[in-house]
Length: 493
Image 1 (cartoon, rainbow, N blue to C red):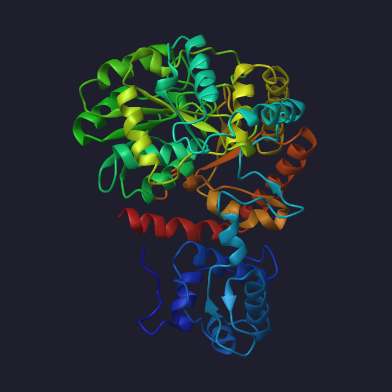
Image 2 (image 1 turned 45 degrees about the horizontal axis):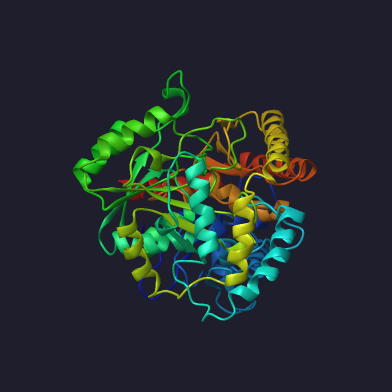
């Protein structure tokens, strides 16, 4: 994507005016409209970072506005962190520190901001507390050892294996590797199976942290689109198994990272018929199927599918307690054949030598009584889902969405390609959003926005009303959407 800055690192008044286009629509104060469009041009890369903007006087003359308008716009952009330099000095573009932090998946939203960027829940209260209390009583038995165990504490591995066996997938403790969360598990798998320049197939859209991990590993992503809901047939939205298998045969990816259980972000669930067919037809392609089951326990509609590993011993499964119990446990796992587990352990020891013992003992307690907190948690989530779907239908009738069968999120289709613009405007309305392109490859999904239903009903109401206000602001300023659409079309061409 090209910016219109010249080699000296500055932007002429005429060049900036061409980028701005018909920016002054009268929908808001002129200085605010000017600042909004410049901000989006910086975020979208049409104005590069560390580029000097025209002086206030020169830009005002070119745009035919008062110098006060440009001064106020530049001042607002400095305050937001998009420009450096004080008044009177040449303003240079920059990425605001707070915006960089807001796009980092590991940080908590600032006070007073409702966070719709993440789909996570608080701990299952007393259950988690009691598990840690029990863990402390069991800790003395481990103290005579060194404390390093790259496979994981045996009692936890046995509990995870029993959980799979109860679900219809006979499993021994030797087939389990305990990790520090699902993301850690994926990084181990990527480093072992894929590596630099090898291909990784993903369903598209997909979990953004997984896409980040694939990029960071040096692997190349092969996205296979999920079919549109209206094209999915009477059985409801699903997966395009033909396209996935064709990509495996033609592209020869080393592995496929899939989310068949209440897919993030769409909430879809792959049927047993599709699972069986996928495993059967993928056999012999050389692609290892890696399935992320982090959301599997959040079955809101009682779908009750079979774990993909039940259809083939070659499937690698990733699991975690982060969504079902508490992300603060930082406990995940890999289930695979013993030979693969040995390879994963060898990779893991180059990254760390094992997880913390107390957390693993607490996790073992939770795994042994896995379903104890789920009844109340699922009931709460069902109520939250209905609240959110009703609010979206009432206040944002131009948006369409799939009804998720489980998981934590609703995948909304917007009436225009404005997801990034909404995410940029959202903090002004007390929200933090993850724009649709976070869930795709190559700038896809500007027409989509993921909205979690993890907040309580009163906060969901506040959030949807804020979304409505941000949408109204965007509808009144169509030039904000245009600044995003044009460069994407150029990049595709």
